[in-house]
Image 1 (cartoon, rainbow, N blue to C red):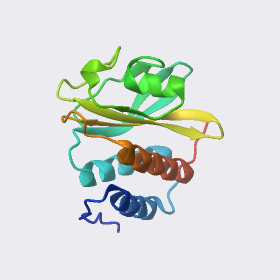
Image 2: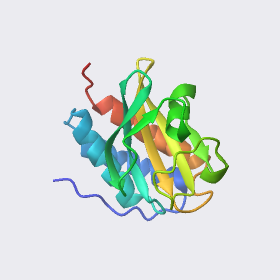
Image 3: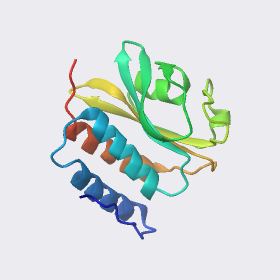
Length: 165
């Protein structure tokens, strides 16, 4: 039985090293993409301070992201690629750290309490599978250490999960 351990670490790279170790243990032996997304979002939401949403959007059809497992308030179900932070991350094929969502052109407000956002595309064999999306009620919550750490989390998730067409 897996039990998440509280991470008492102020140094972000070390914090993410431990979070990655915990996620690897949590996903070990399981390859279901939905189950792994559910546990990944729960672990992130439980361990990473200052979040109000953590979850996944999957590229189900060309040009459209569909809501996957998450922790937080109910969310937008469908996002067009290129729209909002999630859609922009897919279109650009790069992670986006948004200090102030009110300053991001075409931001989609699923939760009016969110002030900053971090979105990491999930890519396997040059194919975008979706995104891992984190929101915070604090402006400027995310930085490059968070981006690098969540990119590692995304790679662990993708490597552990089987995808069917």
